[in-house]
Image 1 (tube, rainbow, N blue to C red):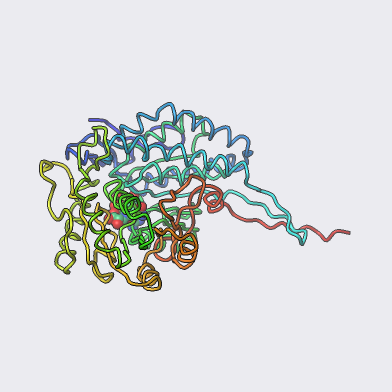
Image 2: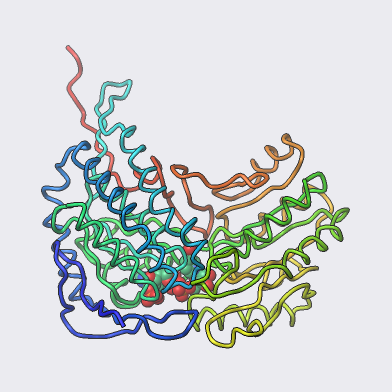
Length: 477
Ligand code: NDP
């Protein structure tokens, strides 16, 4: 078992102030793979003090200096890529092939996206009225990240902080702390100055809340549940910090009769199941035009039945377990709620798949004849569970799509480009994917309504970490 009890503070690996061990489990075997420490407010104080001190000089570095550090980090990340793949597979249970192609790849893609954006960023500008505008680093940033796309969230927060000249303290999820610790090693190897990046492990209630409440933290960037995002916002309010939030989703996927049904329904079901359904932007509500409903249900049934769960250490396109026993329980409860509320179970259901009694594996599950008021249509399941809902008109589809507290992503499948544009304009979501259009590095990621505030990635992601200063110069003579 790996001993990972230390925190990374002020450029060194240090012991926690008070020992408090936690075992990290492999979700596929339920066996411990590492022991970490759970930090307290005192550890957070220490890390924040280091970040505050480092900000004095790091905030004065030039864009060229920071670009050189980021390029080095990129080179280290690429060299140690396989370690990242193995780590995420071990602690999250994401299958090896998927981890290599997606989970670990985002660490390269986002970093490159931010490097490109930093080269384009105008940190000094002049308004038509003559005033000078400076964009300056916001200060010391508290970063709290979840377990579902762990290095994705870390890169989307740590990199813009470091790119813009801010310093930071990261508290990753204690379910997946090991990739974060590996990233800390990479940052160290890249040569960032001591105190610029700090890492303290711990839980949300203690270490997380200590960050949000800390008077020397200028900004909180959080990704996770809407519940925890609200807690972070309330904790941060007393000290009037900037808070950016990337929260949950219940993303609609409108399938019109004129779409390439075979291709788009197959792709949509697989996307819903990807990462065992543990993605905030997963297309979990499929709204289907009634004239092709039976045809779509048949395609979904076939794809759902063919979807396999499997050992994450094996190569292949199967899905792995959920991250934890708690998540397993939540997903089971929602599958049971779907049955109790009268949705028709097409594929899967409650319980573990045959042959997977050990590990937090669940059956890929599809419900049809779902009504948008049911819990499986309103709540984020965060498991491989798809809800299919029929509709009759474009107007109705838009209304049902927008009838949610969330507004992260939306998906439209249609053979009519004019309709795609028209519908996309009316969907209350931060991102609209048309006919499988993928998310691209450098584009903003984030949501409307209770899916959060702010945008991550590329130039928009940098701007969230910048303050704006107006310099009023005297009138020209
Ligand atoms: P949480 O939102 O509780 O956890 C995400 C991160 O926030 C963790 O680091 C967590 O620490 C921390 N956290 C929790 N409470 C607080 C707090 N009061 N102050 C500061 N930090 C806090 O998600 P869960 O792991 O409990 O998952 C529950 C549900 O949340 C999922 O089923 C899914 O629906 C949604 N979710 C959405 C994500 C997204 O990408 N938008 C990511 C993860 C979950 P700790 O682990 O100790 O609680």
